[in-house]
Image (tube, rainbow, N blue to C red):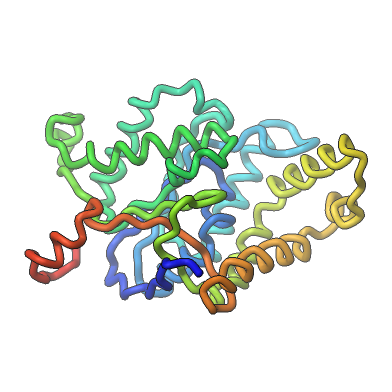
Amino acid sequence: MSTATVTQIAPGEGRCVLVITAHADDATLFLGGTIARWADADWRVVVVRVTDDRWDSVGVDEVTTIAVNTTQFNTAMTILGVTEIVELGYPTDTLGDASELQLRERFVRLIRNHKPYALVTFDPFGMFHEDNQDHIKTAAAVDEAFWTAQFDKHHPEHLADGLEVHGAFERWYFARRIVEVTDVVDIAQTLSRKIAAAACHDLMLRNFVNQLRLQARTGGWRIPMLDSAQDGDLHDLVAMLLTRSSQSIGKHYGIIAAEEFRVVRFGGLEPFLENFGERVNPKQ
């Protein structure tokens, strides 16, 4: 049994959660249930998409792919209750060659602009199980932006533009597999919205199904369910996969459905905070 705790989502009172992801479907698939919980609790959820997903389709031209993936992304975020979307527009699957310093500067500016209570992104320590360079590069740049956003010597041009240094109180990390789970969120009440939002990413998911079919074929397998889904309705397949995944996680913690995270609060110095700090108004 894990020692992670089931985390209660506190009232947001308009405070910001800044979620930085590489692709349109990342926010939904990794933590859509938790995003919906934050939105329902009056958190101002801002989701950043770093790339334009221009190649994430099968049998569709690049211009159409960009447009359709963007539209489906916007629809999915509306279902989850996201307050604002930020598009950085990097070509997808190229961040491995992008300047991490330039990427970090974009994230520092976003942190200073939105002043998040919580900063959310891929877990850089979950990268052993990650094969997507866009995820890896985003994780590293956001992780460093967390603390450089607090330094007045880093990008003083931001300060000249009227922004201020800012320190997020919490960092929430997600991954394909988290090495050290600290927090679990009960998403039983928002799982249906996660599924509905995920089904919006129809173009990207059809490409994923096609990839699975190609791999299966090479291994000498055929999966009729995927063959049917490729040109049909993906909703039932998406619902099954997300339900099984969230229920499997929830089972470990005695709840129906859940999402897992590694959360760092107050830079990992919570005992210091609890011993010497005193509560003040948490509103930004």
